[in-house]
Length: 319
Image (cartoon, rainbow, N blue to C red; front, side, top):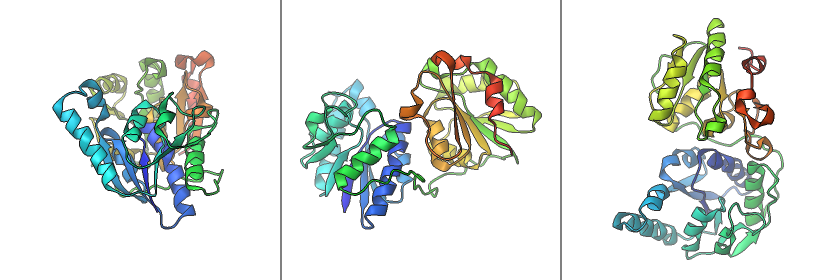
């Protein structure tokens, strides 16, 4: 059975789909997946051993200059690549307007969610087969239910693991200490960012325990903030910009991680590293980190800076 998954972004959302692919692979031993994804996140589908081909898009650039000749040609080639292959099923697992636009131009029939389930109306108009998946469920459960309904197998309500292979992780060639944590201070929204001062107080506590802190970043602005935070201790290192596979290697080797509500927090769950994630405005029941050894600290009044350093310290794993 050959299945095409359309799920373009973003980091955490893509990771939410991995358990569904694992469950489907357990149900059908002959199944394989191709996956359409934004090129910025193309490492993630490659972690799953049953994903055989990754088809990349650059929809962020297309959105800026869709009518340029290069964007139109790239989009034309994307659709040609999809339509060139014969799939038993094509499933839009993102169910918003940008994924539905890709789905609409595919010649083969597309499966997605119905009008009460899609993330953005009227995405459902692109699908020939539609299923109801309640919106009040966690994102991972919604992905599991959609794939199980689309392929007609019995869903297993227990999510034991993400089913990834770590073969693509890359050693960043750092001199790793015997005890270290990864601190993910960055987040896309200011309302999800714990203050510099609180991160520094936490680092000073870890310093006393002889635990080093590594701070990854996704862009130059985040790197500057990481350097400011790390300036309080010689045992804190603001890492230069790395690939996702290098960061994955580092988080996998860490004793634990402490994260803002961002994609790398979900990466901790994917690899099974003990993690504490700090939540402000997010509904944890819908998109919180999911898996073993995952702690959530939910801020009072949805203000992340109401979370005290002592609260985080009280939940640190023993190493």
